Image (cartoon, rainbow, N blue to C red):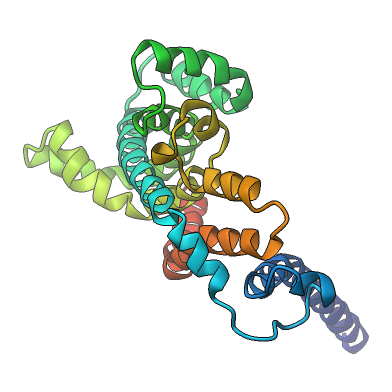
Amino acid sequence: MGVKYKKNRIKSRICWAIALVLAAAMLVISVLPFIFMVLNSFKGKFEMLTKGVFALPDSLNMANYQEVLAKGFFRYFFNSVFVLVISLVILLFISACASYPLARFKFKLNGFYYGVIVACMAIPIHITLIPVFQMSKRFGLYDSLGALFGPDVAFAVPISVFILTSFMKGIPKEIEESAQIDGCNRYRMFFTMILPLSKPGLSTLAIYNGVNIWNEFSFSYTLTQSAKNRTLPLAVWDFQGQYAMNVPMIMAVLTLTVLPMILLFIVAQDKLVKGMTAGAVKG
């Protein structure tokens, strides 16, 4: 027994050591690009070329950030926030309304509808650019922020319904049965009971899809033209064209672009983890 215990203990320590090494490697791979970006955003135009890319800047130079903000960065920022908020509200509502009957109602085509929705996750975004562009032109939505709501919501619905349906299946049916005995109809039950109980799953979807919508480039580039309707990913594109030789300036734009999502993840990471673990256990 003693020899077996020692062998198991050695194996456990080796596994923990390997896990720690892999975790440290992933930490370095994840953090190093961000450190590179932030450090060089404070450097002058030629300071990055004369010194190492990971060298500390000579001073805390805020000129890059001041110029970026003066060039209309806030316009891009508020456009992205507007598109993000409206798209998420529409997406979460549609996903919840679609997931509830798929999770709770038993009808002949339940599996078929669910399979079709899940299969839509395999549709590549880029093959729909031309049809969506033509639809936007036909309905008069081209070069407006309203043109971005549809694609952002449509391509996020399949994965959202897939996750939320599994989550709602884990909600005890006894709660609904008790509510039905008390005279609660389906609509009231959905809005007063199912939606509040689905908050962990909805929070997870909001964070996951929020990051994707925030970073969406293809449709924003295809469906908008004027600077007043551009979003943050296109701000990086525009600034890159204006300051192609000024790498620190581009690093400043990138830093301001990713900072909101990093702060959001830091604030809401507990809800994201709870939603993912709750869905895993219940599903």
